[in-house]
Amino acid sequence: MSGPLLAVEKLTKRFGGLTANEDVSFTVREGEIVGLIGPNGAGKTTVFNSLAGFFAPSAGSIRLRGEEIAGRPPEAIAGRGLARTFQIVRIFKGMTVLENVLVGALLRHRAVPDALSRAREALRFTGLDGRADEPAGRLTVAEQKRLEVTRALATEPRLLLLDEVMAGLTAAEVQEAVEMVRRIQARGIACVVVEHVMEGIMPIADRMLVLERGRLIADGPPRAIAHDPAVIAAYLGEEYRAPGA
Amino acid sequence: MSRYARAWILLAALAAAALFPLVVTRPTWQNAVILMLMTAQLGVAWNILGGYAGQVSLGHAAFFGVGAYVSSLLSMKLGISPWFGMLAGGLTASAFSAVVGWPCFRLKGHYFAMATIAVVEIVQATVNGWEALGGAVGLYLPLTETGFAGFVFNRSKLPYHYIALGLLLLTLTVNWLVARSRTGYYLRAIKDEPDAARSLGISLTRYKLQAIALSSGLAAMGGTLYAQKELFVDPGSTLSTSLSIKIALVAILGGVGTLFGPVLGAAALTAIEETSRILFGGTGRGTDLVVYGLLIVLIAVYQPAGIMGWIAGRLPSSSPRAEPGEEGR
Image (tube, rainbow over all chains, first blue to last red; front, top):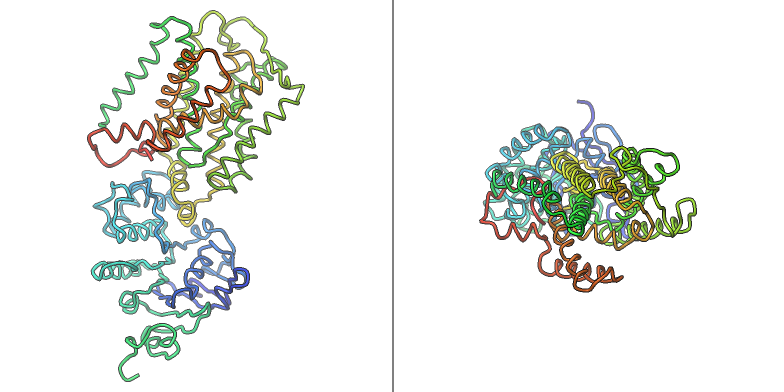
C-alpha cells in the first residue's frame, strides 16, 4: 500500500473565539495502534469529532486512504471505512445486544439474515456472544463499552477511533480491553486510541501523540514520549519519568 | 408470550373482527367498530414514523386529508374510480410528506412535533380558502349506484367494515415487514441514538424520509376510505389538529413502536369516546379533546409504554429476547 491510511494536515477547529485544535498534523499507517493523550480539555475528542465528520474543521485537511474527508458527514465517512466509539456510551437501549451490532453490520450487508450472522461473529470476537439476546441497557458499563466497540467493528472499518474505552474500568477489565485492542490490530485494523489510562495504552501503542491546549506537542514511540520533558511537564507527571532520565 | 399463544390470540382477534358485523347487527355498534378499525389503521400507519423512528408527528391529519381530497376530486371531476384514487392519494401524500418532511426533520423532538402541527393548520387554512376544493363547506360526493367498483355501498355497512379490516391488515403487514427490514432497524437506531446511528453509516434524513413517506401514504389510504364511507369531505373533519392528536394518541395509548399497540389503543379510545358520547350526549364540541388531554396526562404519568407495556409487565417473564418491533418502550 502506498501512502498512509490516514493523513491529517494542519487540522484546525475553532468554536467562536476558542481554538480547540490548531495545526494538528499526523498520520496513521495501516494496522497501526496510535495513542492520543493529553490533559483534559486538550482537544482529543474534538480531533475525533473532526475525523469522524461530526465537526466540520475550520481549516486543514483529513485524507482517508488518499481521499479528502474533511467536512463530509459522519455517515459518508463510516462508509469509507472509519468507525468510532463515544466517550459517553451511546448504545441503542431499546434493542438487544445482538440488534445493536446488527445495525453496524447492515452497513456492508444489506440483507438482514446475512448481517445477523456477521453480527454474531463480531460478538464472538469480542466475547459478548453469551449476552446476545439481552436488552443492551442491562449490560454493565464495561460491557456497554465493549458493545460499542463490537458495533463499530461490525461496520468492517479500516480505522477504528476508540474514545476512552478503558476509563472507569477495573484493573482486570482494563487488561481485557488491552487484549481486545491487540486482537483488533491483529485483524489488520488500525486504531487511534484516546486514553487516560496509561497502563492500558502505553504497552500496546506503536506510536503516541500528545495534545496540549489544542496543539500537538509530541509524536513518537511510547518510550520516547515517556522521556520527553515537555510531555512530562504537560501531562504525565513524575511517576512516568523513566529511571535516569 | 410463546409463539403459539401469540398466533392463537391473533387468529381469535381476526375471527372476531371478521364475524362481528354478522353477529351484531345494530348499526350504531357496527359503525363504532368500523370507526375503531379505521382509527387503528391510522395509528398503525403513524407508528412507522412516530413509533419506530421516534419522530412524533401531530400533523398526520394533513396526509389523511390529502388522501380524502385527492380520491374525491378524481372521482367527482374526472370520474376516476376511488380505488385508483386511493393509490393516487397515497402517492400524493407520500410526495407531499417528503416535501414538508425535508425542512421539518431539521428540527428535533418537540420542535418537530410543533412544526407538524403547523403543517396541518396551513393545509387546513389553504383548503378553507380554495373554492375549487370546496372551500370551508367541503365536497359532497355524488351518490352513485352502489357497488364495489364505485366504492359506494348504501344498503349495508358490511362492505365498509371489511374494507376497513382489509386496509388495517395491509397496514399491519407493511409495518411488520418494515420492522424486520434494514430500514426498520435503522429507524429504531435513529430513535435511540441519532449520533451513534450516523457513525454507523446511517443517513438520518434519508431514512426519516422513507418512514414519513410510508407512514403518510398509508394514512392517506385511510383518508380515501373515510371519504367514501361518509361521501362528504371538509377541512374541519379531515384536516384538523384534533384528528392528528387522535391518530398519535391511539399509538401512544396502545404502545409506541409495537405492532399491535395502536390497534389496542384504538379499541380503548373508541370505547371511551362512545361511552362519553352516551354519558354526555351528542358530539359536544370539546368533550373529545378533554378526553384526549386526560388520557395523555394519565399515560405520561402512569404508563409511558402504553397498554402493550402494561401487558408485558404482567406476563410471567418470558424469554428476554423481544421480537423486533414488539417490545414496549
